Length: 282
Image (cartoon, rainbow, N blue to C red; front, top):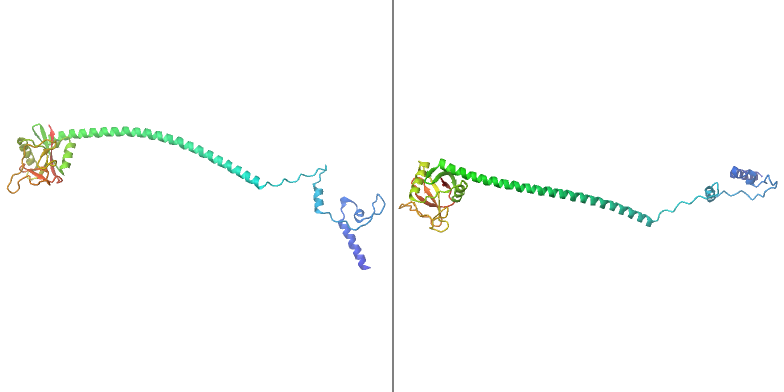
């Protein structure tokens, strides 16, 4: 009897806990007769718990009886790939547009630079022409100064002026320097001119004895002595001595120098460095 009483009590408490205030009275939940009918209802046992699906269905019902629309299905992989490609193409189009703009800007700047370089090249050409003119005038002035110096500092003999330069030069170097000064290497053409030139050299180097280059050589053909201007030498003042008669250098010594103590001529190696004589038109 005690076990039956406990079981009845548990069933009653379970029924009470399963009841819902908004869906009906306690009597309806436990099977007791409805007040309206007055008839006892058949009790078939406790009512089952509502399923989650049922609750979800009830929650979707609105006040007007319309059901809520279901969520749209996620986009497919194809749509995602298509949208990605479209975005990448748009980015590429923007990049190409920026490159085109940059290329156009660079082309404009390059054109401007080429125009400036062209103008600068023209100005450089004008400057070069001016420099060439200045150099030409400088050479002419140097020649004029050399001629004046030759006649003021040197000795005038007939229609020419002679000047000794005490720098050491080879035959070719002395010839070049004389021409740059507006003159040429000394070329005594007769006995009178040779004797006057020998006296000037002796006085200039007294009491020493120094050889000086003359504008005479046989570099073109052995034994054929020519002046610097290409004319043939007709008067010679070779040293004559039983120990050292000149010329004696053969094909090795092809340029002529004059001794300052007696005015005699000696043939020498053309690359030997010695003092030299220049002549200028008076």
